[in-house]
Length: 199
Image (tube, helix red, strand yellow):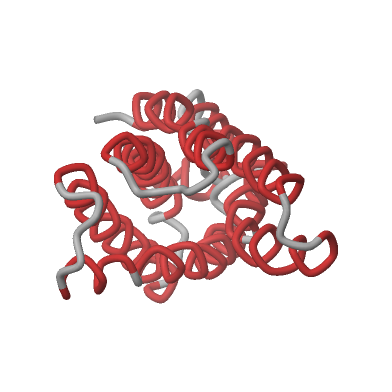
């Protein structure tokens, strides 16, 4: 699967977390459902595609630590996807496995801060696009910790979180998609020179 296709999947998946939040906010007594699991699965699938694409884009200029960070993010998202498949099949599960996988959700989001820094310092993504993974990584601490402390745990906070997620992950998908258009956007001149066939 090429980078452009991964970007399209990421763009399509971006609104699903916001949709899940919005639907849950309309319910007086929210209960986990298969639909909620599907929304989260679709959103995380787009996120996973973005990280896979970023790994391909950044691998040429990233350090071993940077590459490892991206690989760990992919692994965490894969575990998150497994949890969401479980949530679709049995949304009210109380097993140890389900609860263990559930713990990965905040870990996945928090780890995105390190992924954002790895992409930023790789210098393989150009212009504004290099900052977007870090913006996505800030979603969790800003909307689930800072905003509730400022505004309280109300519906407005939920809408802010939904809006941030939709915009952040949309920009992530767009940045991945647009990075596939030309190598000049992705790679510095010296990397392009190494890829040129020698006479």
